[in-house]
Image (cartoon, rainbow, N blue to C red; front, side, top):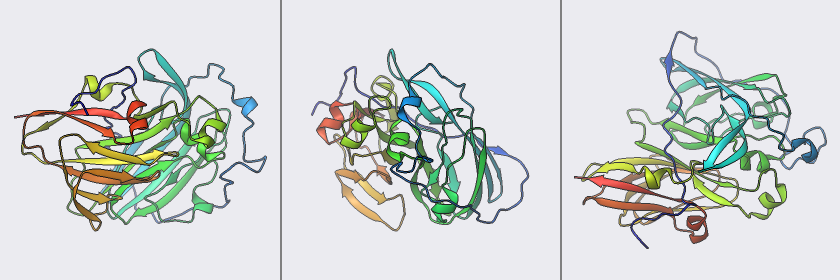
Length: 326
């Protein structure tokens, strides 16, 4: 495998997270509401007809998430929008988004945080929702649809450290994820530090093609949604200086086989939980909807490609590069 991989279909981009603002707020107890979503969209009331989802030029201005921390109390406001995003030079995709980006913003939390998250649906055409894998609360109450123009507040405690995904759960859920509705949650353990880099793998399909999604025939498999970013603008590391990578596989369908060419991962924490350690890992397998915290140490300067070692995914864009300096 060549040490540097370049083509018009090589993808990657670093995600550095939502901005953090500090203000006074009260601590919050876990809370949720009611209704069980139909994940495949079998109820007419839960499914938006595909005929109404034609690409008609809607392109909402991205609205940034707001994160306010006061001690261990964290208040987050997020927005769902339809926004056109650039996924390769000269290529735009009519995305359904959290806060106007694909992936959505990285949510940085600390173990023990009391979280209040309000989802505001700015999409004028359809309901959206949010499923937070870091939240241990009843999904039939918390992860339900938010109609256009409405909002919903979810409260939970970030009790378990790890690297988690969040995604839209509105029906058909697979299509909402494929259209771009996902992101990463990092819950840092007590006394721990956030990762150096966050990488989210996902698949892009032909826009609004639910059959392609169900058949699992993506057009691209990407790292953080933008072509060539890590090939032309690689991630940086230094010799003998440990780095950590929080890796999330948003799917919606494919397993990832994350591999760094010319390196062996010192240790990998499955789901980002420090209790789940594997050492000397050559390829880290991450299921759709899961994550991992990867620790690396480069011992010589050079260029080190990182890929999904599932070769079809690499050829479809799941590749990037570390440049290691002395």
